[in-house]
Length: 117
Image (cartoon, rainbow, N blue to C red; front, side, top):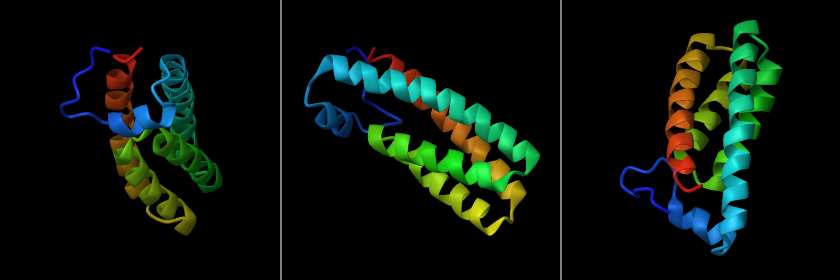
């Protein structure tokens, strides 16, 4: 593992504790996050464009769970805010702003996590 732990977008100690040091499980979890997260980000973008609050709620809830499992707390925080906006069915501009931040955070986390593969 060659990734720097400075300025990490995820909590490496949490992630390592989840897998109990098992490198294969670590790789599988990282790959699942990267692959599924990429799909969720695309689906979220489509749902936001369509103003489909139900799909936004579902997708952001899934993203929150995945990010929580892997220890990407910045995405969890953004997902919580997006979920609330979608539940209230107000603040499309706020959802778009939060989504842009989530996209950035996901890309950063994806890059850093890929260094552990």
